Image (spheres, rainbow, N blue to C red):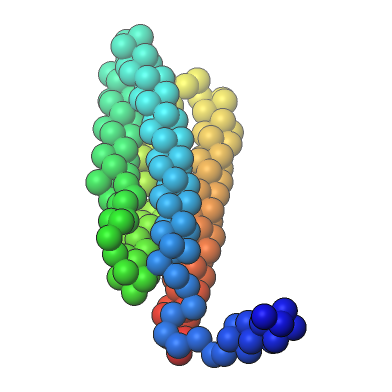
Length: 194
């Protein structure tokens, strides 16, 4: 056989327009697997950090003798437990079954991207809001137990720090939601390509 003719035939075959999806089931599975591992690592980091925070607040709860601070640490513990439970229930990635075709793989992967996008986009009600009661109790405890001259300046700095942390967490999650939306859009375009 003539290698030039074979190469030309291969080029003609490869240059033909694709019908249907441009991504194979294996390519989608590969991307979905990477995504699942990335979400698993995120959840592991969040769980480790949550356990350390709960341990810190539990130690503070046990060692303090002031009732307002006990209430504060208890509220923070409950808030952190809520966050970890919600992350477990809503943020655990689902594994793609191995027997799916390309179209079904694409739908499954897109639904996972959308689920994670919605989780991080709506971070306020499940991630930040559960910490607000503990934070408000901390303000009350600090006002009640701090000497008057340093109370308001220190409280203002503490409030500014917490607001900055909350705003930073919210902005990072909004950025992650936009990145996930771009991935959803890319999969939609691949599915609609004909």
